[in-house]
Picture 1 (cartoon, one colour):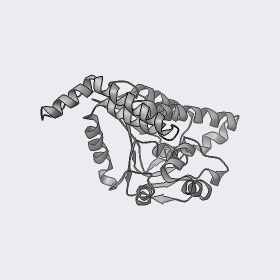
Picture 2 (tube, helix red, strand yellow):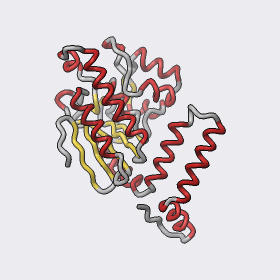
Picture 3 (cartoon, one colour):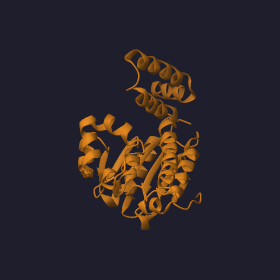
Picture 4 (cartoon, helix red, strand yellow):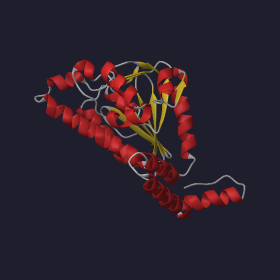
Length: 259
């Protein structure tokens, strides 16, 4: 267990677990939390980690930025920019590492918490979880990559609705809208996230990373550019130890043993 002040971090085999751990402040993001989250993301960017499970402690996943810390800063703008920069560094690392990110949304995800929740490659939402942007409600604007991911996940019109009206979605609605992968009974969220993590961790790390890279580039590439990327990545996987093991195991009708 690595010691942090605002999060917890642990690793069991190929699965790393990060918990936002300011339950008395609704897991609100301050400079300490986002700095530590960026550091934890960097720790996960290694071949020893195949899956990262990210969740919150207490009743909230994350209620967004800690407005009390924002208000007490000598320069609110400079303070918020620093918090956002560290959060964005964490999100960028999670997006580009080969490790698959599972967000287990245990409660309310608001503001930057909403933004962070939907960055998961797989998103499990507890039945009691809710999702709301909430930025304009306090005179702010979105951060945490939501202006990138939301239009891609739900389309421009629905992204506008969520950002401008601060509509709150239930966990079931989040699945219907394409923001979450599945709804899980509250009491089963931890177990389901752990089971999903183990299932993904049994696969080839590089294959998961290739999927993430392909999808991340798919909306900016032309058809030909995307197919070229597909060709290069599948060729790279075919020559990799895991790729060779996967094909050989299939032909031998046995379970593959990936690194």
